[in-house]
Amino acid sequence: EYYVIAKACDKDGVCTTATSKSYKMDNERPVVAFSPTESKTYKKSQSVKITVEDNTGVVNASSLKYIISNTTTATPDKTLLNGATITIDSVTGIYYIIVEACDGAGNCVIQPSGAYYIDNSVPTITYGTNGNSAYVKSVSTKVTANANTGEMNTIKYIVSTDKNATPTT
Image 1 (cartoon, rainbow, N blue to C red):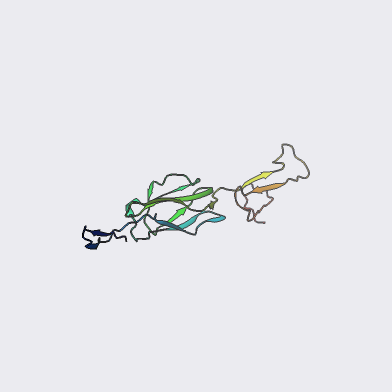
Image 2 (cartoon, rainbow, N blue to C red):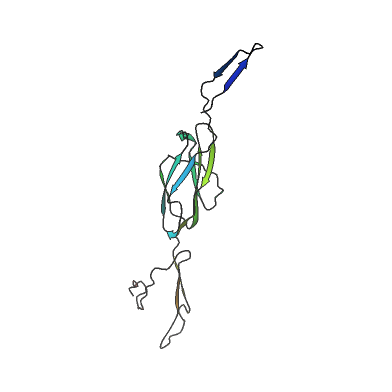
């Protein structure tokens, strides 16, 4: 709060002082918090709680917007409820949540989160030699699996006469 204090004196040296009522001013932008702030371990999905606070306690709820993007410069366009949990899923790559928020005085902020690593891509499997056209006594091949963005967890295989057999080892 701010006050204006004025002093006036006439030619005879008689003075008076008057103090105004308080002026409420706010020049600070709201603060956006993400929990967790980031996650650099690949996961299928990531849930993030978003809270917005203001030094005066007045957040303009209708100004709250967000977007999930693979850049930190995207423009928020979806409605956000303060304290909501947003889930990033069904994508693959490094993603951010960008939030726009204003307070009651009109101070606004656009705040990106840290990076969240999301992996929903299926691993690729390649064979050194993938089949052959003539019958031979024995065959060998190299099987390579690539997780694309994350780490491989398991590789199982089976040698079978049934092309629909389920790998077990």
